Image 1 (cartoon, rainbow, N blue to C red):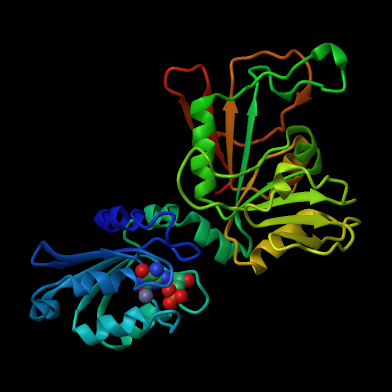
Image 2: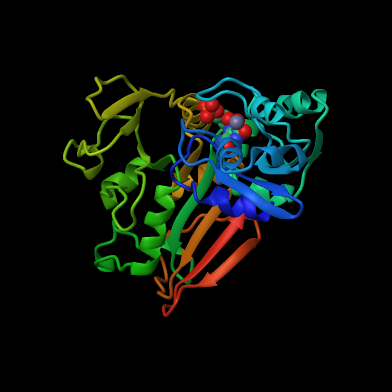
Length: 343
Ligand code: AOF
Ligand code: ZN
């Protein structure tokens, strides 16, 4: 199963919105075929693993290990559980059960009915971790939510820019942390910022320091006050503006109307769910991050803590969760904390 997980990871960044899945066929203690889901729309892991077995006769005496329950439905490809049944494999070992409604136990049931021995839950936790975005999306009917910010050692996100004496803001993060942020962007489906952040920082939210997929950019703009000249409206990739009143969309900049008189967090999350966008990074500012925290709507927070000291300014959001991981970035004084809100 560890090998399945290792194989599955090779599909990272290519398979979304599908999960990463690996499969291994074992005959008398030896791997005789292995494969992984390589691309969304392409064959599933089991197909590659079974095809890789040269002597098909051996399948009748083999065990197939799969990190996710073999599917039961006709999607972009036919059901893997049918393939396994037809191949004559007598024993299937499953990592975790598929939370996707069209499968959710039905693949296991099919194989059991066909007389196959099925073991479920081997390295379950590691298999859940591997596809945490996919599982959260299907189980909670909302995307997996990352919060990300950089703060000073004394807990500030930014200086108070309305105060003339404070002068120029200094960078809290550094080159290495920026690269980590860009890498993380390639692994999520959407990235959200508030109006103030769009105004003050004018970020482009594009992937530049890593190669991979560009997430959909999301920005709040209740009053439609953000100018057309900001980087977010540069028409280089799909961008969604959550507005309070309808505006005509252009090819790459869509306007989605929210009811700002009500809590907007669930409205944004519902929209993402309907769009099949399975993971989100909230990148600021303070107000928006705090709204997600106060509503318990987050799964993982990534805090970059620099060595600078502002003394006053915009205070960083407060989390009441313990770090699960903390590392000092190589050769810098920047500390990265990862905190989890999952049980
Ligand atoms: C498997 N093995 O390798 C994967 C599975 O649109 P489709 O046909 O590709 O189906 C996608 C769904 O199939 C996906 O939501 C998940 O439930 C399951 N993925 N299943 O047996 C695989 N990638
Ligand atoms: Zn399948």
